[in-house]
Amino acid sequence: MTTLHDRLADLADEAPIGVPAPDLWDRGVRVHRVRRAGTLAIITTAVVLLAVVAAVDWQRSAPAPAPAHGSAGLPDRVWSPSPWLPATQQPGQLVAVSGAEQATWTGTHPAVVGISASTGGYAFLDLPGADLEHGVELAPDGRHIAYWLTGPTTGTPNSESGPVTGVGVYDAVTGDVTQHWIDTAHGLMPDFLTWADAGTVVFSAGQIRGGDDASDMDQSSSSFGTVTSWTLGGEPQPVAGVASGAFLQGAGHGRILVDGPSSRQDRHVLVDVSDPTRPRDLEVPRLAGAFGHMHFVALDATGRRIALVPGSRNPNVVHAGVVGDLRAVPGTQRTFGVVDWIDRHSIVTLGRLGRVSVALQAALYRVDVSTGESRIIVRFPVDSLGGDWQFATDLLDAPSVAGVEPSSPMDPRATAGLTVLVCLIAGLALVLWRRRVRA
Amino acid sequence: MSAPDPTREGFEQYVAARMPALLRTAYLMTGSHQDAEDLVQVALIKAVPHWKKIADHPDPYVRRVLVRESVSRWRSRRWREVHTDRLPETPVEGPGADRVELQRALARLAPRQRAVIVLRYYEDLTEQQTADALGISVGTVKSQARDALARLRAEPLATVSP
Image (cartoon, rainbow over all chains, first blue to last red; front, side):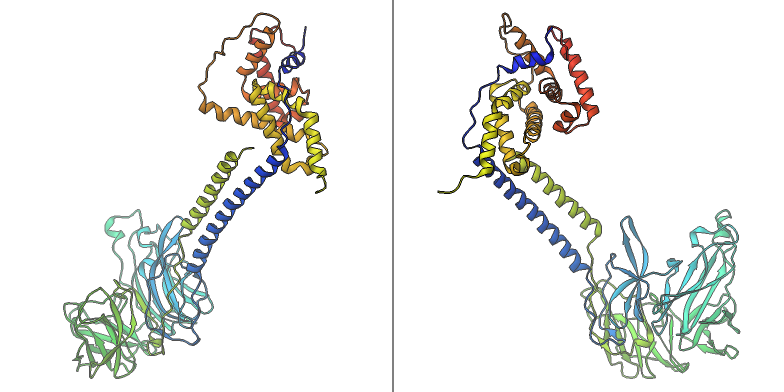
């Protein structure tokens, strides 16, 4: 019996008797050169493409160079921030903040963007435990941000409302957060949160009556909140002389203005938070409502003057002056609201840009309340009315500096996709090339 | 006149010495004179860029290129050629009949099985050497050899004994 080896050897006897081609070596060298050149070309192309992607990504992500001024300045314009801006824990003193959508690989979520007062750079702010549904408040000096905290409740939480369980104060210079937790069974219903001055937060929030397992009525109703003053470094205290559930009309320069008894809609109460025992009644014209993050009424440093946009429509004319003797400010017909008083003669307003609106655009104006003479101090992006932006009011009088356009980083998903695509195409091209250049 | 390149000379001496053996192996794997010659040329040309490294012991590398090229060519041809289970009519009577039957049986094997059979039972390589040449595991070599032998035994051949 023959073995398989024998039979294979027998069959192999039929193999051709080949004569070696004389140019095998030369062909081998030539094929190797061609394959190597093609491989090198493909790899070089891929590397160049990847470098282009990386360069574009880097260029769009790179922060703009910091301006030379170094000290705090007011940018002459602001931009809509990219959702892919970097985040920071210690941005330093801020000149402005705005709510914005921050993007992640899986979607977007509400966040807060700040503009550095010294560099003009934009960055998302890390606010631990923040409930951003109810907004944040920038302190007048731009160093602190107050915000509502979300956390555990003693009873069934009211999830739809957060639940809000306290107030946090973020220090933009150190990155530290001071938290004040409020005992609550189901969560708090915020009435307002504001800064009376750079070191005093004032807030009010009622107790929600029911958690997720309660009736719709209980879930959507709350008690009157106690207006509370919190001096940084101290303990929060109820503001004496202010009724529970009082509605905030204005704040600043150490005072808050809240509405008075419901029987008198034009009567308001001005309270000095450092000495709340002597509240003062003020008569304020009927208001249409606040615009964006602004208060209804802007108070001056003396507590004697106010400025506001009264009436039943908005934008409208600014009225300003000593309480009881308010006068229309000329040339302010297109004003949405008053941000603050700079001195006894000047206010900062938010209004439509230009007399003829070609595009929807707004600006901050510095306005002389006597003459109506005004000049633009900050321009907002096209199609923005600026209502989302809050400025550190102490810096509204700071030197104007050229706004620094924020970086607009590429969507990292697109960057990763392009990188993978280039690698795949290069790999495929290599395989095809090496198959094509056969010996 | 330039001095002779010793690397090239070594290659050409190897080709002259091993060409017949390589052709026999290639013929068993392809079943075609033309394909066998082409396959050997390709294997040798591909060995040129690596010759300095393999000059001392070139057989494993050349064999590896030979069998892998054979398998990949068969796979690419599958898409271009019309497959048929019937081989062309050839006389099967007489002294060459057994060769024809064996050739037909080998042709019916999958290319990797054919390569395993040739390397294991003609080249007398170990399972590990066969695995290295084909770039597969020893376990795969064993299973491919087992299946290939079973298929050969099922063919109308005289008894196949490893």
